[in-house]
Image (cartoon, rainbow, N blue to C red; front, side):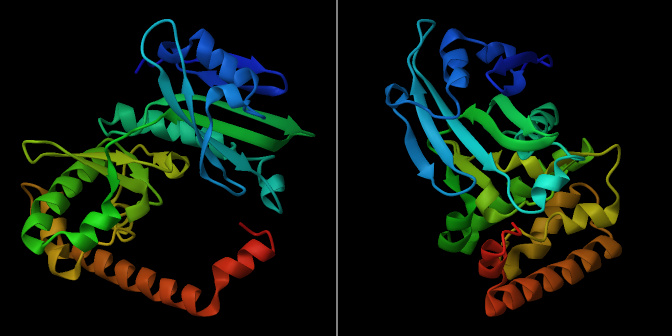
Length: 273
């Protein structure tokens, strides 16, 4: 991925585009991003406020481009937040590029666009290449026998450690945000999603590293091997292991409370999320 990005404007929308994707077909899509016409063969992958649509673009430069467009709606008090913080689309763009610079895989970031009204974000879009042949790690963690899970969680731990050493932390590193592509040689390639929650830090301390791992549904029997693989040549320290254990227990307890009280449903009704 080129380190440079080009400014792009489409109507009321402004953003950036990766030079390698600055093609007439992509520019044409950006020009109608608010209402994608039928000729782009749009396929709705997820409906709702943050809708996800896949499009297929014919190009004269090569095979058709398959692109995923994520639309971020802004409502409630989040509108006021956008006076001070970047849109989710822009954060997804910068987060994806940070992952790539750190040597981690994510669907190639193509572009982002955002529009503002009275200084507040009104609509925003993030475009990335569509990845096929990968599956959520959630299913593998539940389905594979323990003997096959060992290499998987160890490879995942090493990949995350590489990102952490580069100062990159994913603040929503959950099973639904990690895709896995298995190679014929038994290797694993991990693709990290939801990149608007990715942050670049100068340095990650022990507690931040451990806390970022707790959302992953690593089976209890494999948690210590997972932490050992994360440590690599160095055995994980007692503080790291204990903080992971405490944070994991607190996170699982909070999930049980949320489910019991139906907090997600109420947050949606009150437009708090």
